[in-house]
Amino acid sequence: MKKKLGVLSAVVLSSAMILGACKSEEASSNEKVEYNEEGLPIVEEKVSIEMVAPSAPLAPNYNEMTYFKRLEEETNVHIDWNNIPGDGYQEKKNLMLASDDLPDAFYGAGFSDHDLLTYGKSGAIIPLEDLIKEHAPNLNKMLEERPEIKSVITAPDGHIYSLPVAAEMDIGATPFFTSINTTWLEKLDLEMPTTLEEYHDVLVAFKEQDPNGNGKQDEIPLSFMHMFWTADIADLIFGAFGMPDNLDHRTVRDGEVILTASQPEYKEAIKYFHGWVEEGLVDKESFTQDISQYLAKGKTEDVTLGSYVWWETEEVVGPDRADDYALMPPLEGPNGDKLVGRANGSQYSRGAFVITKENQNPEVTMRWIDQQYEPYMAAQNFWGPIGEIYEKDEDGKLVNKEIPEGTTMGEYRQKVAPNQIGIILREHFGTVVEMEPRAKQRLKDLKNIYMPHMAEEKYPKVSLTAEELDTVNRIEPELIDYIDKKRAQWLMNGGVEEEWDTYLEKLEQIGLNEMLEIYQDGLERFKESQK
Image 1 (cartoon, rainbow, N blue to C red):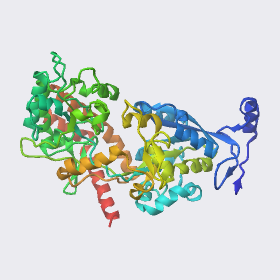
Image 2 (cartoon, rainbow, N blue to C red; image 1 turned 30 degrees about the vertical axis):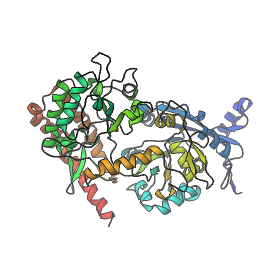
Image 3 (tube, rainbow, N blue to C red; image 1 turned 135 degrees about the vertical axis):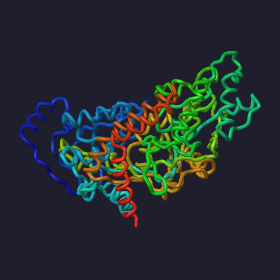
Image 4 (cartoon, rainbow, N blue to C red; image 1 turned 90 degrees about the vertical axis):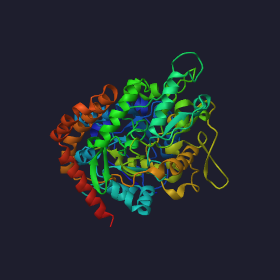
């Protein structure tokens, strides 16, 4: 096998000698090391690389995951993980970049387009296109088979600063599924609601008629998580007024980029829903609760949850109660509207992995990460390793094992799968890996319940120039923060009609029109590139 030899500086060599007594068989991350250009292991002498990664709430340190233990055994590359809880990751990542206190790489990096261009230009993260070409045969193969993925990860300046993540499952058209307690419906002799008015009456019954039978008024008719990506009322309420919302508050209508949160339908939806809050039909913690609090509400000793928004019924209420709930179809609003928003973006994402200027072994790092773009490895990264989530059948396909009793697939996956890196193409399902039962069900639900009412347009994954990103990043954070605060305030306390004109003026002052113009230009360029 071919090898390349890096030169150790005197300083690094001295440091290595000092540490040698306790770590003689492992090179530290600030040494340039020999590596194998092909085959495994990647290095003959174990090397350590420092990586920062966000982690799910139930995830252990990544070194405790079977997936990474096996990867280390095969590659001889040890990762010094700094796992940061997902809800605090972006802030800590930004502090590291601002203070120039960098690891060798960010894994599951979550770098925005602005991050990529800013820190690519400054040199904090390095271009990857040559490393991909020379040291990433698995990823290269994927980019050849799906050139559109290469387009997504190529920056306007022509460089590739980050690696992609993609699973062609078509399950992300909308994340907002509403589940309702059908056992309570039957007990109270109620039908599945089809309109907002009917749903309102159901919520009143849930509140007042003691459907759990414990003699207490402890039922929660409706709970959600305000502006959370799988738990908001963006479709449930706003869609019933013909203006489905999303976390961007941005969509496309008849080819024009618009802000959902400045439309009259948005105002009417807020005014309508506030009435439900005043009646006590809505869990007031919906505006403040975190994931743990939210998921716990479906697992109380007495059943207390009447309906909720989450893209998997079972994950909220647990496997023992899942059969007591069913998905509620999109509801018709007072004006006859019944629309489901189509999620912005693409199945292909950039920003998943970056290598920093501190990395002395980018070739080793690229070879290590490329192992995870091999389809079998990518499947295990997304959903879990062989022996815990999967076993191989007689055709070599990864098929699902039974998960431990008393847990849900979503919870179990957090513990065993990083779910950060890889590409699974549509043709890999049924050949390399069996589609997860939850995903099969979600596709079925999308097709039967949501797609017939889904908006045709969305804002795609576009690339903005550095100058455009500078402007958007000056305007959009303040704009979104203001919108989200007013949305929550009006939903809880009312006042949207009285404050609406002042609110629209404030949006313009922050820079709404300038931002929309940039997004429109980006959309037009995207359309032109697809011809």
